[in-house]
Image (cartoon, rainbow, N blue to C red; front, side):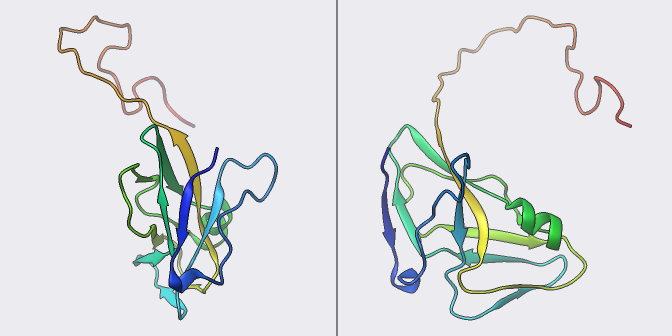
Length: 147
């Protein structure tokens, strides 16, 4: 499958997203910034990628955190997963938040998130009374206790 992608002027020297290994589900997105952005503990920042894409109507792209960035520095994607809809044609931006205890520097070209392209299922609602199940309305930890 191929998807049309446009590299904007401020990202011309950065590589397109690629799968880092043969079994990778996500492709790394990079920071297309001119100067370093410091994200203080508890702060958030929108990081541009310099990319636009044209997805077909049966696809979405999900922006997800990178596990290493989350584990090592406490930085994650705030609205994870962020959804890029098929009809969006703006620049892909990544909202990062620093849950760590120290400021984190984001530099030009840093790998900041993963992009996963996935199929979309569209549904139609049929309003009706629902059947009961043994679980019923139980949720939010009702099926057991963690330990």
